[in-house]
Length: 200
Image 1: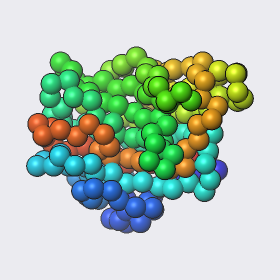
Image 2 (image 1 turned 90 degrees about the vertical axis):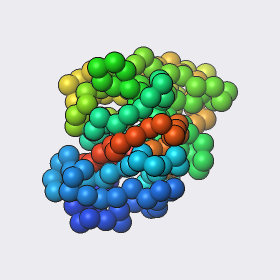
Image 3 (image 1 turned 120 degrees about the horizontal axis):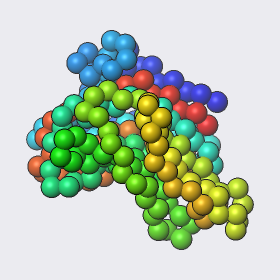
């Protein structure tokens, strides 16, 4: 099943189940595809700011495509900001992280094992421009099979992933998008999201 989150075009967040923290805004300036997109602000903000969508049931396989633009946001001192996540109630199952480096940005994916530890992929370059990203996550097929994993893919085909994981007990029942974990005082600017499609 595929769910297109099209409410940005109508200047609302009505496609989403709810908003957490400082509400993101829908603006023409943040449009990356079409007339409007979602703007998440770090200006004078140290709280989380994201939308979330509750899925029809706990899922063992998920794929989300969305456009993201760092928009020259300042993420100082090696700060790592999570911008998208699959969650089970309040527990992160897989999440996409971004950091600022000399000359641009980098991104990676992290995911939860059954023992509660996290597996993290390698950092890959992320341009300071609109980019279509895909976040894949899948639970292992059975206990002991150790074939679960997560993948981040850029529009140009560049990927970063973790595989061979013992995570058959993990399920996700919602998607979060915005400023999730890692919001810090010295972050400054706005990031943009658009064209969100989730497959399950």
